[in-house]
Image 1 (cartoon, rainbow, N blue to C red):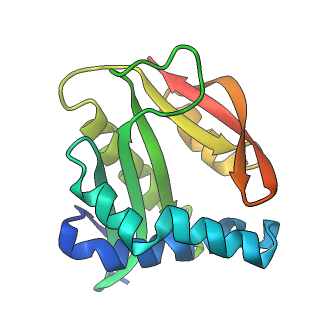
Image 2 (cartoon, rainbow, N blue to C red):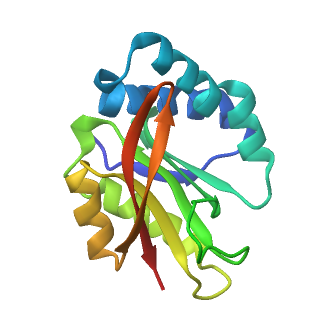
Length: 171
């Protein structure tokens, strides 16, 4: 296997980004939800129309991770919309960061995170936010190494299921 390539996604990548988004979410969390709730969530969060809107939004950026031409991960960043009293229009948010399980632990996620955070701070340091599932301990450790600290909690809905999410902040 060659070294994973991380690159900014373009509008031409909408189908690949939509597919890997749904695939990595299902691989990571799919077992937690009733099938009908999961299907509705995937359509709303990772459907092709939503993905195209994200890619067309100049305030957002997305990345793909490729290995030998296969898309194996992605990230999305943009303005923060987490439910916390200290969020302002100047804040940025890492909205998504996933790589397929077989690449986890090899440094690809850390590289993708560093690239995404650099984009969020391209105009200088600012307060950055991340929402993470309360039981995703590996992601919490990764974000902690990058200077993020827990500052709140909220409920993240996937259909009728409400997940306990932590709100992390840096800066």
